[in-house]
Image 1: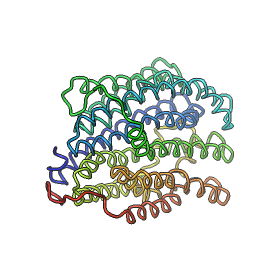
Image 2: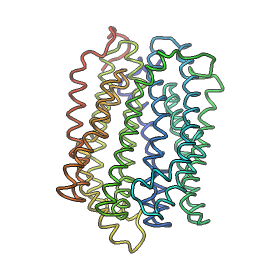
Image 3: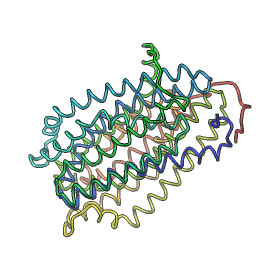
Image 4: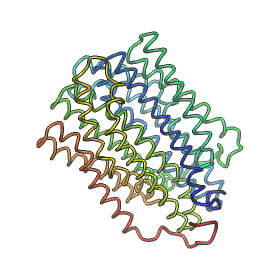
Length: 448
């Protein structure tokens, strides 16, 4: 397989570019929601989407846990030439994801409103948020599978096909947003409907190659042992807790913002997070794109090749983050204006201040994201989970608890920088003390 034979730099671009484009474009459907909702529905609707999105992401976290954990195991097995067992894991995990998605949909539909009320949001914002999340709950089986199946396409070397699917999905979402919100004036629930319809189409198209049985993975009969299931869930637990911890952090952050600055502050941070989602999608797309190759080479025992690939990930992530920092501090005002209704100067001013301070976090925020993904690819779930929890929950909560009482809203905007520095130190220490990545062979394929 080309994972072990292609020159590392060429392999890096072969895997990373389609995945980064896929992630960046797929993030546009969220950004498109923000632009259409903010400009054509209003400030309360923008705050409602930001309040409810963490709950949506928690539901997706279950599918992500199974998909990432199993794709690492599948890549290692393919590297060991154990293709039959890899297919059993793939088939079993797709079924498991479908079951999880049905459960998540039921919980989301019936428990969304009580969860929102506990956060202290006003009645209008709560009602708008409930409308939004219930659409996702109805479509959850198809939507959650879409976010999972992308991992298996990349394992099979179909990164470009995945990229095309994400582009088609994002463009379809933007078109439907325009039709539903601008032309038909259907309201906030139609923003969720636009996303779910386009993602459902993406799921159907993504499943086609696996049913045709022309890839290394396709559906077979077989059952995972409890030991295998426990191991892959443990390895994917870092991704689960990344989503849950980051979503929980957003819930905590929103609660703090509601207390300090009201729904205006929640709307302001949502604008910044929409812009930040594009940068994050590039970083995570970059890191995730190399997981199959790193896991495969790890299974083959190619330690030098593993290190060469990760070095390219880190250098590229640092360059992207630096460019984002410069761009957001020089052109942030123009971006923010896309999300704000004309004449809403208070939201524009607060969002500009938030972006000015928040953007400083890009100096270090890429470190734990890349190294956490690296540890997952090497089948080190314990270390990966520790890095994830520190970076997405522990240090952000501690930083928020210290800085918000001292500096108010400015303390909230500075929290990502403080948390990023601490998590970067922990993630570097986790990798530095790991020892050898395993395996014995250093000779197969070009290394550096």
